[in-house]
Length: 383
Image (cartoon, rainbow, N blue to C red):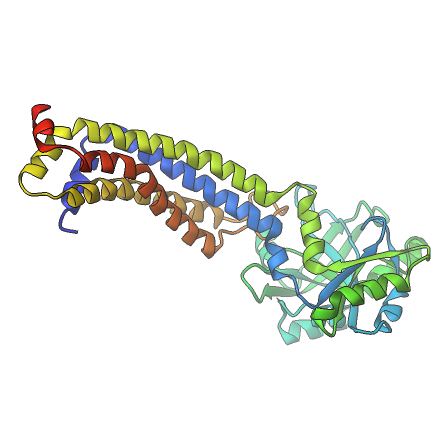
């Protein structure tokens, strides 16, 4: 630390060059933050998926509906302890860009299956007592300024192409940091009775979530469930909840590979820019480095000074970039609901901080070795 003023003075020698290099590092780490948040939004649900939960959907695609009567048959399959269903509603609130998930569910069964959704008991009681009642996640309630007691009109382009009006009776929170709190859930009995009036789709549901008694036997249970409905008009495909979520994300592509490729290109460019800056800085100070060695600085001291200078530059840029990314990402999902789990995970912040140190070491090691190997007589002749 006693040489910090010397390291700082060296960085300030060429202020414009240092500022431009610092700015490029900041931009790289802002991009790193956003890519990490996008990756979290697309695949973060996989990590939160319940190990004891399986998704049962139509074998052809999730667009195809399944009979409501399948629920009772699933409960008779050995190893299945609970089964609940959901149906994609695909509604629009005021404007098509106001996208968020809505599903009709059976309240008590649904909340028991997904304990990560936290709803106060009095609001749960109100939901059970209100046929047109709905609950919504905290994020969506804040996004639209909804409060309990409001009437929420949702236009459904799928179900009878009419506007459905729900009474907001509860606002749920997430038990975990990554829990999706953007969805709206309403009562299936209200939904199905309305479909009966239109004589379309009654008794059909989108997909099932089942809980298995022993997660280690999940594959056997999945096979038994699919066998139960084999050769029926609506055959099923059963898979772990994490695989189901991953399947949604994979429609875009291999997210991890895409993120890694972009970050690799960005950091390779930063490596060249910062490395060039440090090499040029050392070349310009050969005479001064010779003086330092002449007055008693060891090779190790010179190596450490250059490496510390490089690391200080990348760590400053990295921390500034991470802080800016954190501030911008904290404002929430920029897509208006397409990425409900959009946030900057703490583990990725720490990874970014570590990367900034590694970047400083890698870009500084060659110039530092060059400085370390300088001969005093040769360096002083260049002054």
